[in-house]
Image 1 (tube, rainbow, N blue to C red):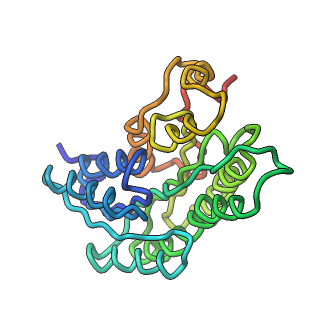
Image 2: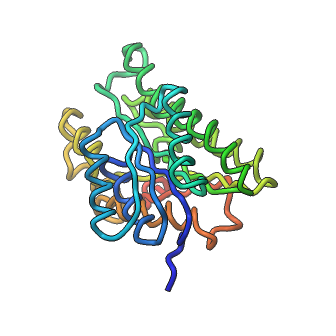
Length: 255
C-alpha cells in the first residue's frame, strides 16, 4: 500500500532531533523524499543516515533559519535535488535561556528567541511558497506550541514567538487558500524532547512530576505523536484543512 505522502518532497527544519527528527522519519516511512535542515550538522546527518539505512531518500543542509540567504539557499538546494517542494514542516526552534518576569527579561535573549521561532518560520514560508506555487500547491505545517495559545509566567519571549507563529499561520492560510497551498500549525504540549529536558534542568523548582501533573492525560507526549499529526496535515487526507491550529497536548489547553 502506498504511503500517505508517497512521491512527495518534504522539508523539515530542526530535523536533527526531537519532533523534527521524528517527523522526518515518519515522512520517509510514508514515502516522501526528505530535505533535513538544522544548525546541528552531526544530528542532521544522523537523521539522514537513519532514513537512508531504511531505504529512504534524504539530504542534509546545514541552515540558520534566521538568515534569509541561508533559507533561500536551502530551498534552492531542495529543488535542485528533487525538482520540487511539496511539503514543509517549519519546526526549528529554541527555548529561553532563563525564566525571568517580563520586565526583567534580557534583550539579547528576547531577540534570539524571536529570530529563530518567529522570523525563522516567516523566512521559510517566504521561500517555500513561491516554489510550491510553481508546481500547483503544497502543504506547510509550522510548529507553534500550547504557549501560542495561553500565557506562561516567566516565558514572555517564547510565548510571544509562538503566538506569532499561530498568527502568521492563519494569515498565510487565508492568502494562499485558493492557490492550492494549505498552511496549518501544531501546538504541542509537554513533549519528551531535548528542549523539554533543558527546561527541566533550568527551570528551578519545576520537576518532571509537576510537568506531568499539568497534563490531564497523565504523561508527557512523544515526538512521534506530533510527527503523525504533521504528516497527516500534509497528506491528501487533510485536503480541506487549512488555517488550523491543532493542539496535540494531552488536554493541556482544555483546562
